[in-house]
Length: 118
Image (cartoon, rainbow, N blue to C red; front, side):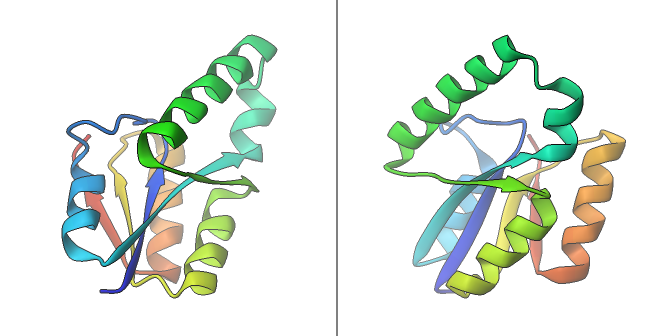
């Protein structure tokens, strides 16, 4: 596979991240992505949380040597980017929340996904 996307959601760690490790092993190029999902921001976007998230994303970008950040619906933005860069798969960590399960189902309808334990 030439290009893979690693979609970061709750698990922002680089060290010992199964999705990131698998993508790096399987793809020639790995594009890390975080989507500021309006559905989440509208409910939980308190200023102090957003400041903390901004710092965490900055640290993640520094650790990875870059991070694509999009804003909007996580599925739509991930699919859009995957098509733009010709990504073969989207890798991400599993999440048991109902919101995450819906997101995963919607992603599976659009692109090849690889889900890993978090």
